[in-house]
Image (cartoon, rainbow, N blue to C red; front, side):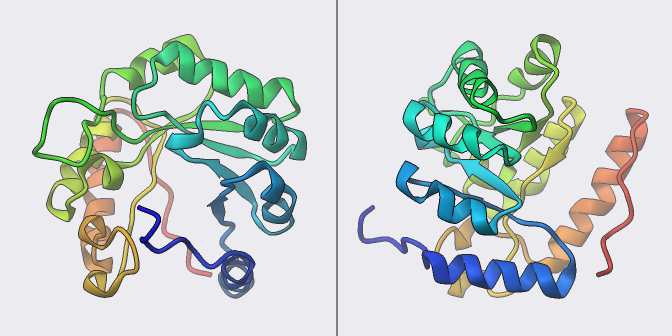
Length: 209
């Protein structure tokens, strides 16, 4: 909606850069407009292409030319081939590190915000060398199903997760209903380590700053 919170612009980038300085954690943030790509690239360690921009080819070319790592979210109605072709647009214009994110697709189901397409994870990994991660927050839209979606993604072979976390989700300016509390996120990570271990993988220790 045009009436929803639209972000903080460069002020938000400055806040994220300060958080990186304090914690040592790199950050990824979205570029919405090809005219703003250079500004985002000045601050961000990784640039996100959102689901609605997955086939914005002018934006993809501009982001690729920055040579920054890119997080490419699958379009909500995109096929696997269309998703991989968007990744090709990025890489053919200079991007060397691209991560594909499955964040749910649009279906007839009305019990969740989107439908997490577990089947595309092994298919993408078979057809491409690119890492594949899952966004269980946007696929579910509700905090109670984030953890099951996340664990299902790991079980299907996902290389990582992107999860919304907020200490006061009822006060969040956007996506509050799908945000985990910090203690819920810690619980998720405990279970994720168990699922990963069962698959012969491991998850590193938490970053301590």
